[in-house]
Length: 422
Ligand code: ACO
Figure (spheres, rainbow, N blue to C red):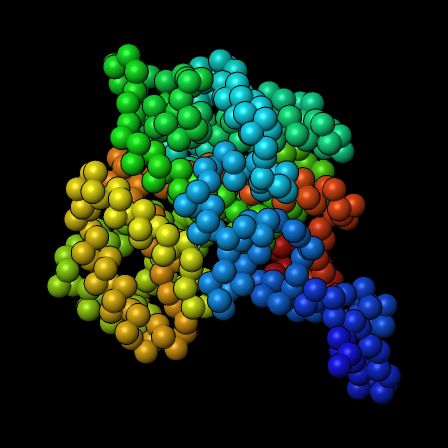
């Protein structure tokens, strides 16, 4: 059977055939044969914006793979830094490559003192850490003007290392500022997750110490959030990057997209929702409210996963390990009952709504001591590796500037009327 489709223009009766390649049909054939007729796809639900070899999601089967490796295996046996290397470079590192990568990331964690002293200190006392994070990323581009040379692969590599290394420092600085605590400098002998915890929570002790079960759970969360193909923020990174903006600006734009509650902001919204529900006996009433359309069940639903989100399954296990160390989170009972009620209800079943990665991540973050305002920042730290992998892939692909068309539905030409005559 031919792997192609035939399109007939009923205005003229003319047909043309377009091959199906990798599950897609090339829009240039459409453009050539039907000039001036555009696809209407406002939220890109049926549009593949690029070819990519980074992350493979098969939504109906609950499959997520980075560079071909199942997320379950990476979460169990790898670590975030190795996964970041895999995403950026396409292959798992050898021991020598890993050591060099870990060394490079560790030695790029410091920021210019002007950043801490002048830039961070300029924020209002109650600034949201995610707003500070977005701005900090953009500000970084002014410290590294050479990053503008996006066509030089070696330069791109250096900026990628810098960004992956510095984002925990930027994130922690925002938090420390927001609670009025002095900034903590990165420490080179700590691994990626422990160093971040130290910059967040160290007080007066000589050396910050953290239960390995805690840092392991945080590292798993970093792995799970590292990439997710063409979601809203990654598409933003590719779009802004397609204009040849520098990587700091492209990643800042992506982080701004992530900030929204329909995307990375959902983990914070889940916790606030659990707080609003308040008690186990109010779950049924809340579910009824969702069905009436009064509010959404945050942490449920996904554009791509329509059976289950594999990350949610791994997170539930990680949560159990954290709660063994920290004691259970009082909101867990409410979350479990919500999940059970929703999974058995026709409203959710018929719409294929299941818990997504954000349903349980907030409970873990909270048990690790992070306030809800930091949750989206915690999502953004590892996603920087994903954004940069896509940014780099896009630049290697000889891409054109992203520039969609529109269907104009506004007024036809009309004459200007002076304000006194309106
Ligand atoms: N609670 C209640 N109803 C929902 C929910 C929800 N969380 N999500 C979707 N629905 C309903 C919609 O109202 C719609 O119902 P209708 O057909 O009667 O109109 C139907 O399910 C389909 O939903 P859409 O909005 O068309 O799905 P879409 O793919 O556009 O949106 C999204 C996906 C944004 C994730 C949505 O499910 C949502 O807002 N979820 C809550 C926020 C959330 O958890 N976001 C995190 C996503 S994962 C991530 O970014 C890491």
